[in-house]
Length: 490
Image (cartoon, rainbow, N blue to C red):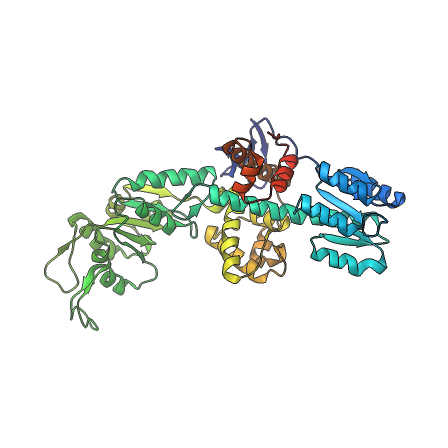
């Protein structure tokens, strides 16, 4: 393997055919490298040879594969017989005009980028053409840079739309566990821990930073255990005052304390046969920890003010975002209770250590937020996705979800752009990225797309039509993605 050291401490490792960030200082990749993406093919249509040649030369010099057509008639034939990604066509031509070329292009490929070149008198017609699917129009006279900008921006938006579509397809087809999604090495290892933990009945301690999803992990353990048909009762130990937490957990009899107007069963009895989830268990006082330990050892609970204990059958799952070993050293958490609860430890990784899951999670949250808001959001722009991947997410998955919710609320167009993201995320991602980060990002995302498409095509025996249907995209879109990623046709 080759290794590249980053000055700012980022590291990427390969696992399960995917890329993942992990603590350390090395970027590791496994040869052979995937083949470079094929340049987009652009058809330039204009009956004026000077305009046609100028457009073709500008695009060719910037790395595009260019074919030319001197008339609308020849362009129509090329569109029906050749693989074309973008069509740049004059609006007014003597035989077949630009709007007819637009119609043919969209018939061949509904997602083809079509850019209309128009003189001033025909601007209204060009704008009308955008209603029928043209990506943009370029009024004459125009500079080479104007043409290049329009082509690049239109392609960028289509790539963002197609990438979002593939992410949504991956979401539907990726492995998930009780609503948690991910394909990184660390998440797959977490899912394996959950499955192994669920089949036994031992108590569990879940460790992880705030916002990593410790409660979903606890729910997944419960949902996949033999207790799945019994209650799952969550208790946030940091949100309930100490004097009330004891009454909430153990229950009380009438008159046990001022305001106890009648008997009430505690959460331990409410969770009988199921799972009691003690979130932020380190916030519990040492005195209450001692009482909880006794109940764990005896398997019975006595309500406040009662004289007789009542037996219960509960699996304890506790969680904390603190350093539990440090809490033990400082005697803020009882060691005997720790050994009682932490029969199995499950570590939930922070989001910065599984950055390749960020696009998948962003698409997951974007779909749900857009549906709730009723906004027709089509995806995340490449620039905004770059920010999301570069940011360290100290608030982890919860913070990412909040950022996407904010972005959907602020979005004015069909795509989430950097300006829609929270200022804290933008500021945090402004630091200079490590050398080669953008190259890694492009190659890593292309590799994930390539592997996903390869797997889908193999599943359907190389049949492009069936694979496209399974992916929920048009056949021509899949063919274009295969050309761009250098995937061989069956």
